[in-house]
Structure formats: C-alpha cells, structure tokens
Length: 280
Image 1: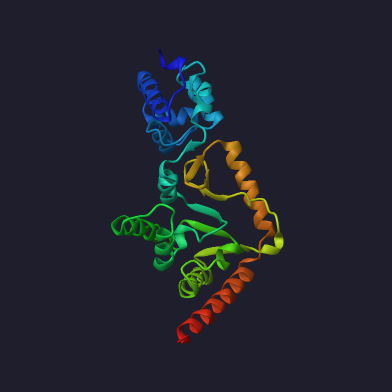
Image 2 (image 1 turned 120 degrees about the vertical axis):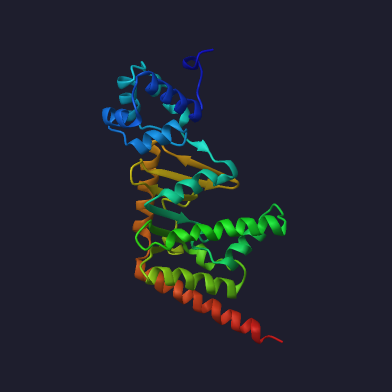
C-alpha cells in the first residue's frame, strides 16, 4: 500500500520529507528559509531523530505541496518509547544547552561519583557480569564530562529529600556523593534544590522527569519508570512537564538552603562512617 495509507515510523517520515524536498529541487538551506525551520532541525527530521511541531508540519505541507501528509502523520511520531530506557535521551543530553532534572529516588547520572554509580549498577534486579557493569560504569561517568564546561549546559537539579536520605552504598559512599554535589553547587556549576519531605504531595511526585533545551531545536521532555523511558517532543506534553517542574520547584528549598541541608546530611553520614570504622 502507499505510504499515505498507513501509519509511518519516524524514519519513514524523515525519508518522505527528504524525498519530497529533493523532488521539489530544494536544498535543506532553501527549505529552511521557506518554512522558518532551522537547517539543523530539518536535518534531524530527515534522519528520523526529531519531529516537526504542528506549525512546522503545516508549513512543510504547504511548501512541498504535500497535501496534509506531514500534518496527518504527525501524531504517530509522539512519545517514542526508548530502547533500554535511556539510549535516545542520552543522545539528546549531549546536545542540550539547558538541562533541568527531577530525581525522586537516586542521584542523577551526571552527578554520580564512581562509588555511588557502581553501587547503583550492582544493585539492579538483573545480575550483570563484571565486564558489563564496568562498561556501564564507564559510560555513566563519561556523561559527567558535560559538566567540565562551565557555561554549557546550564544544569538545574531538583532532588527529592529521599535521594539524600537513602544510604546507597553505605555512609562512606553517601558522604562522598553528597559532598560532590555540594562542591558542584558551591562552584556555581549546577543549581540544586531539594524538595523536603515536609512538602508532602507535589507536582512531580509520580516520577522522574528531565527537561532539555537546544540551540536550534524545540525542547523535549524525558520521563522514566521501571525499565521504561519515553522521550516526548509533542509541544503540549513538553509544556505540561515544564509547568509541573516549575510548580515543584516553587515548593523546594532555595539553592543555598538546599546546599546547607545536603552538607548537613553529608556530615551525618561521615559521623556514621566513623562509628562503623571504630567498631571492633
């Protein structure tokens, strides 16, 4: 059957965009000017990595004389499930200029120390070989390299109090981990806010969310659950996630207050670790 008669994958959508652009005798730069879509974004769409906004799809239909093809099949591209629940989001993370993340249970990957990350990887429900674990650990620690540039990305991290209270790996590991977060916050490399238990129910209590903005592409949201993850590009869904983040942020402690709390909890872990060492 013709492609117009069936739902399409993102890859097929992108291939159809490229085919119709070339049939119209247009370069990506020329179509970019006609549709007011950045050339970079067009390239990502043709490669099947991004989706157009509803307005973008309307302009593509008009300029490429595509009827309503790009508008009609746009909904089939929403909410793509992520293989191994982070692979696609990881690619976007490396391109983002702004990242805002809410972590309900564990420290976000880009902030994890080696000891904390190793404990997280060792504690999963599915056993891993030493080689597999070490490969995952290297990948996770490499993600932290995006923090080496002081200016980009701009990173805001919203932590549920459970993240700093749950003793992943024991007192020594937690003390090191929390002091690492404090150091990043004090150096102004990241901005940290803690949602205290006293807040009770809040706008993000149902799960993890990561918001990402880009230099020349629309923002996305990534949500995660047990062994599942989803990248959202639909503007309405992304906007809802942004609003939920803003509401929860309004309930959180200030950056300075959060650093003070994290520092205090780190001292508690240090004391507990010292007591462990002193036991016969």
